[in-house]
Image 1 (cartoon, rainbow, N blue to C red):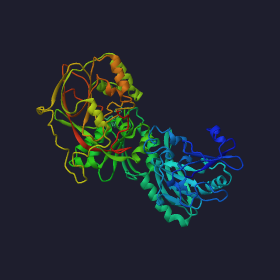
Image 2 (image 1 turned 180 degrees about the vertical axis):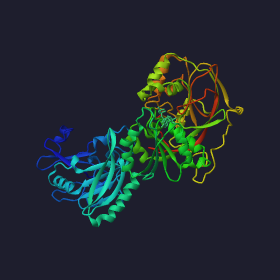
Image 3 (image 1 turned 90 degrees about the vertical axis):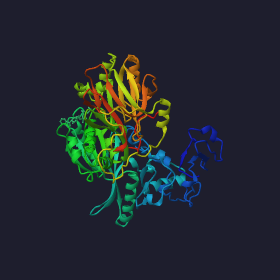
Image 4 (image 1 turned 45 degrees about the vertical axis):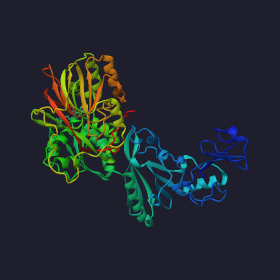
Length: 590
Ligand SMILES: Nc1ncnc2c1ncn2[C@@H]1O[C@H](COP(=O)(O)OP(=O)(O)OP(=O)(O)O)[C@@H](O)[C@H]1O
């Protein structure tokens, strides 16, 4: 064992009594060894597993014989991490992506992860990169080795940046000075690009180049570097602030990450359909909609109208950054509606297939990526337009207004069931990896949209579909994504690419308190267990309104005629970028 040491005149504060009488090393449960030195001071070492140890180092500091501790072997517990990286990041940077590099660091780093310069050492760790001032560090270590004084203070390491927040790195060659520049997202409420510059000598340029390449590889593991974005901004989306949000919060992140951007404002309703129909799919990696859910809905449908629809839907990731009031897609894939944090998630995002749904109504075939709803939810989507200025709050106010009336929306529903009980759904949701896409999504795949497996609304209902009468239906809600808007994880069992739609039906007469508790439970996914919520996984369904002349039907938040419609899933037909591959961000069903 070995480690850093610190001294204290009175012995370790946490355990002075036990250690006071001992001259022999003891090993308390925390992996700490404390001995009293000749001058009466207590010196403690943190025990680090032997994997840390360079063979030439003794197991305890050899008094007055200073040695150099390679920075790659610096005990991880000694690292300092800025408060912003620890938690003020809306959960995004602190996830598996590693907000606190120190806590997650593992024991080994390979030689190419370490760059030793004259004054600094730079080390790529499991989920962070550390930059150490070697002179400062070695002075402190020498002092510790000789005198048993402080070496494990925060001053030992100068910078520790999570790999997730590394946006770019380069070797900058100036006329008189050269430097490695590490551009990272510094998070304080929002993410701001900041540059760390580490001076390098001319003789180090080659190895610096190699190290920078290695850093970018590690920082972008599983993800493409320097993505090419077609950005569509709806200047009228949500509260009408999308353009400003893009300029102030999103563009700086894209620029810092060396992404190329081609920005276009949508000019009119359905403009995004035309753009997606005509876009050169080889020129971009993703279409990023800074908008509500309406623009990505149009983009999917524009891509779906192309003769090479399948290829286009596979090639181009379609993403949303928050420019609307719900921003369900942004929440589901990035876990936030903070524009700059979501932008970091896209820049570092991993390609994830996800399921799309074909909805047929009359002669139309519409692609749906988010949800179809009738009753309460549709009213919230479409009947609260006059409250758009409230942003996300309009859904809460709208809900409270409507739940009082306990309205019902009678309907007849045919379903093609996949999983029909909550226990099995829970089990399904706990499977970590999604099955592979059921359709051919290879780059070579060509042709328009996949054919409808169950026919359209104009065809007879297939024989194995189950007929359900819902004379008191209050809410019909079918979705593909876990999160519909902030704090509404209505489909906690949804997975991006499981080939199922999640269908939730609730009667209108369950009682106001029950309805409120279901909506409140959606924050954590607890509503899933409420018996009054009928939750199934389905492959297809047909919805027919009964005994009503008019009402709202919402497809991805867009109003369609109040008439029968039919829906079926297309396994993994769509593509997006997600913080974690094949995973939605949100509560996990336990
Ligand atoms: N320049 C424009 N003028 C008018 N309408 C537009 C314009 N650009 C896009 N639209 C339309 O705005 C509609 C809504 O778009 P979007 O989803 O971005 O915002 P939203 O509906 O306000 O968002 P949310 O549903 O989250 O409140 C879409 O149908 C789109 O066609």
